[in-house]
Image 1 (cartoon, helix red, strand yellow):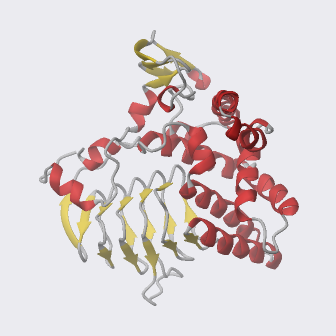
Image 2 (image 1 turned 90 degrees about the horizontal axis):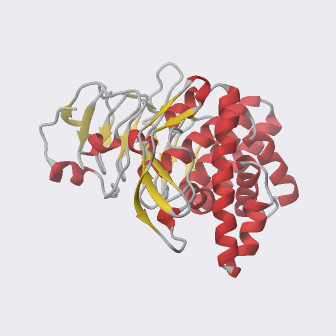
Length: 351
């Protein structure tokens, strides 16, 4: 990807860009065991089976720490999850869940304070969907929302194939690019951007049913999720696969907005309207592999192309071409070639 700006310019565009990022390819080349960190080259055989070279140990840990936490097989990336057949998707989900459970068991055995919480939130469950439904129900129940009714509804919707696929890709994506997410257990239990997005995915599934009761329930979940997680997304808004809301506080996504696959959205982002309607749309359409900087506002029924970088606190009210970088008010400062299907975050940020 060609660039006419150096490291300092790109760093200034994002208020909270991670200092250490992993591209999807880097994630594919990383495998962590319970005691050692290994780097491997990997590929996929037919049918989604993993083919790996002999790993080379990089470091050894005698006691538990986040860097040696259990990880999924290195071939599972957000792109692989999005393209997986239903049978492969189930296999990937089981593989990742086994890794999450193993890590939870290790933590529970070494910390009495966490043992009871991990037993209820993780170890009592057989799938990621079941565990996530439990975690979300704990967060959003109360004040008239009966947990005994909320949890089964969340599980039903999170177990739908389309929702489960996106949830798994979201989970992998966070670990792939965020240095604050050393493992998937951490994201599953503690990342409110992930929790808020999954609450939206449930609400969106309810909204699509179309009946009044489902839509009122979807709006109820939207309001509760907004209050708890700080992420206000209308249930009708469409959000693609492998999306990461980092920090998430103060994010607003309007009713007719859409976000493509593998996007990175920082706190304070607004996808809002200007009062103008075009072909039924009042809100922006965001392409795939787009990064939206902290505090940026994209307003009106405009289209943001794939592989676009929107700088922190930028205001965008016009269409932005694929591969462009935009700062200030509609100021395009850079355009680059089309990116690869499996996005390289490291090159995108130039760090």
